[in-house]
Image 1 (cartoon, helix red, strand yellow):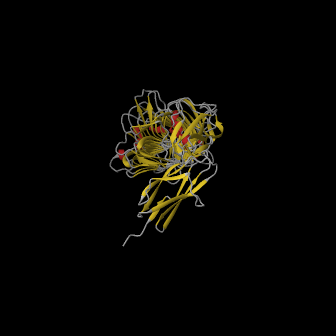
Image 2 (cartoon, rainbow, N blue to C red):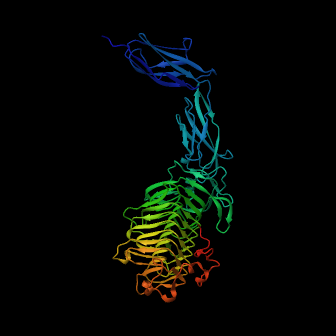
Image 3 (spheres, rainbow, N blue to C red):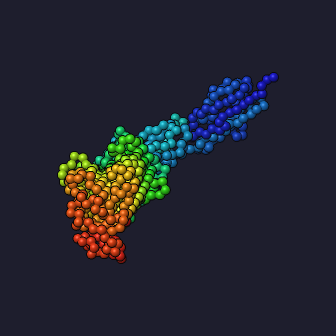
Length: 639
């Protein structure tokens, strides 16, 4: 019995541009006699549409060709396939005119120019000029093949040009042996920033308004006196954001910001620092680069760089190490910057077994000079890192550098389960190749977050976890809980250094606890101001007060100072006070480590702690204030 006849044609319609051309169809049939007719709608033969490549039997790929259309009218035809009693039709249409492409530009993220496909064009030309319709030096028009419908303008090497551009697309087509061209509409943009951008000077900064503008800051790294201004909120939802950098080498982002980035909103409220009362935001910044180093909005800020008046809202920053919301590391000036957290916001570092450079902070991971001031952290900070801090993970003092953190506050949890220093403001202060005068200053800082470390010998402090180099801590207040399996201090867990080691005008109201083992003092000690002092050099504690409860599981605790590691050195203490009650007061257990202990400190009643005359020698004009029957507090803190 013979098989039934089959007949199938695909596609079932063809569209040609006005220039005509050839397209392929596929005929599948088992018929030995297949007839094909090409007619118009009235079944009259047409001569503008022809067929090639079929001998009338079996399956085949068939070429259908349309001539150029010079009639000025849309042409239509039908191709009828007949095999025995089976008939199938394919419709053919041809445009009456050569329409110009219409282009659109995604200016915010991809910087793609896109356009509708024009049928049967021979190709496209992407034409680029400056704002005055003049050619740009070194930038040629781009020839693109037929079938192209988009181009990413960020792929262009703009040479030295920075400024406004005009872009259009020209489509070319042969019509009856005549090459014709249609040109699209023109879109305008700035090749790197916003159309309202200036020339990158102080009085005419680059304007940053979109995700791609942030990325393009990387084109201007390592250059001094580049000014950029963010003048609206920027949402990075859905953007796979990388730190602002110009190179990733050996998994570390390179390139330092040496200009000024300002996101101030409204008038400048403090001309001395350039602070504004309000700031614009970068929202939903997600940097998930757990194998890379130096992660933050900026990978690195150089010593001449400034970032100010910026809020990072709902960030997630995950890095191998050197991680913070504003910068992975900085030696410049960060002022009036903050982050705002929501569920899932965090700053996290995981360096595996190598903790040598694994620093994580709310504002920056690593600080090697410069100044951070008037900054706030609200993001949870954790990880397997070498040092963690609410503002800076580590402060490193270099030769002739005096890094300073001033008027900064932390309101979030900072914790780790590795054997590393943890602080509400700074995790660790260290040095490399310095002389005898350099020191780090932490001044007028405030912590309200819970600070903790869960490994033996952790050094945990409400303000600083550990110092191993010269440091001054002045006018700081810790109100958060401090917990360590090791040294826990209301101000500092463990303080060392070479020459300058000073704690002055500091207040602890948070509860401080060490949960280390009961046999080893180094694993289990707590102090309301300082848990442990060590190494050579003068060390002093002046005009400090503790009212927070101090506890350990073995009794190695004290209201102000727990102990000095080296029996040959003593603490110069004066004007210091603690409440005269269990778990708060300073006991005689540390007297051998204190110069003139009889006059160095006093245990006072709660009533006395609320009277200004109790605190002999304290500055209640510029530093301290006391009112409404409260304990003394420090003026000017950023709460």
